[in-house]
Image: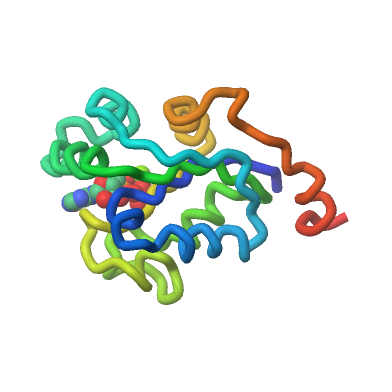
Length: 152
Ligand code: IDP
Ligand code: MG
């Protein structure tokens, strides 16, 4: 068990549909803390870098077009095993396979408009966080984690 930091995005569909508040609260309620948060609109270069692992796949261009189509909310989220925990809160990539009660099952119906992104490994988290944030963007929430969330 370890404290991890992960990148969560509310993609442009989530922003446009007014779902940011509901999505953010799900991570907070679970006991994860936000250590950086930024509204931004990606350009193509940064979008292709972020989704580099999918380059060459049939949906790649559509994915880049969509993620650059409007503002998104980027967050760095921290907590015990946060990478897997946040993926669980998001639900499976295809909303049809997402667990009931997850963000994607509750609010999405198609794989291409599935509202959220979350890093899938420690390596992805480090790589992706560096695309969206600078070291000085992060605050410390160590005190909050120690006080309310972590077991002694
Ligand atoms: P993830 O977001 O659950 O990590 P990935 O496999 O990393 O899923 O795919 C990145 C994003 O690309 C997905 O969230 C989804 O929006 C989109 N995507 C993945 N597979 C497909 C597909 O087969 N058709 C259309 N879009 C897809
Ligand atoms: Mg992924």
